[in-house]
Every structure is written in C-alpha cells, then in structure tokens.
Image 1 (tube, rainbow, N blue to C red):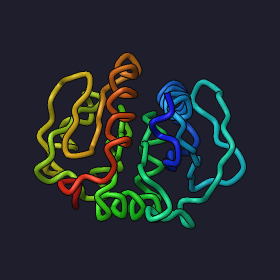
Image 2 (image 1 turned 120 degrees about the vertical axis):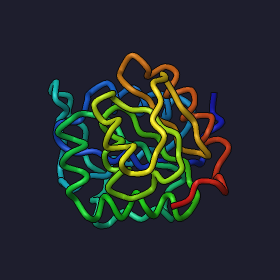
Image 3 (image 1 turned 135 degrees about the vertical axis):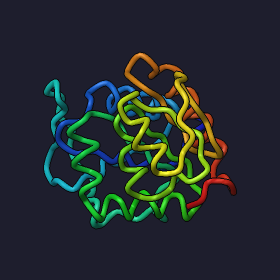
Length: 182
C-alpha cells in the first residue's frame, strides 16, 4: 500500500499530546508511503501524556503549508490548549485551509481549528466537551466516529482511530479540495 508515496504530511503537536492519536496516524500514513514531519512550537522532542516521545522535525514558526500535502492535529487536552495559544501554529492551520489541503483533527485537536477561524459552515465531530466551542466557531457539531467535510477529517476519541486513519489516508490521496477553504 503506497498510494501516498511522494506525499508530505505535517503532524502538528506539542507536549501533552494523546499518545495513540499521534502514533497511530503517524504509523498509518507511513505505511501508505507518506513522509511525515513532526511540527511543534518546541524543539528537540515532545512527550505525550503517557510518555511517548517523538523528535520534532520543524518548528511551527518555520513550517509552511506550501511545503506539505496535508496536516494532522492529534488530540490531548494539554496539546490542543497549548497549540491554540501559539500564533504560528494557528497561522499554519489557516494556511492549509487557504491552500485547500486536507486536514485531519481528532479529539481536542479541534480546538486549534476554532482559533484558526476555519469552521464556519463546516460539519465536524470532536471530543464531546468541545462541541460548544466548535459550534460557537461556526461549525455544525455531530456525534459520529468520523466526519469528512470537503477535505476536513474529524473524529472523537482514540476508539475512532481506525475510521479516522482510513478517511485521512483517503482524503490525502485525493489531494486538494476546492471546498476546503477559510
């Protein structure tokens, strides 16, 4: 399975990410041939809430959507909250939407979408506690294992990872989506 060969994906995270929500999409995308960069406001390595460590490839300040085919936003309460406070990370997310590129967000990864102001008119899911925040940001929130809306793939929890990963691979393989806009 190499239908993502030649695709480059940014995985945006920081300390406190939900371990499986970073490692499982990372593994699935690599198994399909994608090259992955871990992008973070931190340098060196970042640590998940259960202790998994991953090396950072690029800072959020230096990353540009033009260099990637897609973006993945793993969850984790601390991860989501810290990322939405990083203006470079928020700007990077907006760039992906400006360029119509696929974006995947699971669990608390949806918080940064609200701060990037990219949810108006979109249908999404997330960890249930984010539903009010995402609705207030202009989205229609639904309780489903995975939702795909014009290149935006969202899911709720680690239990949804198989469906999330499958749709993420599919959307990245399809490439840019004209409906994926700010």
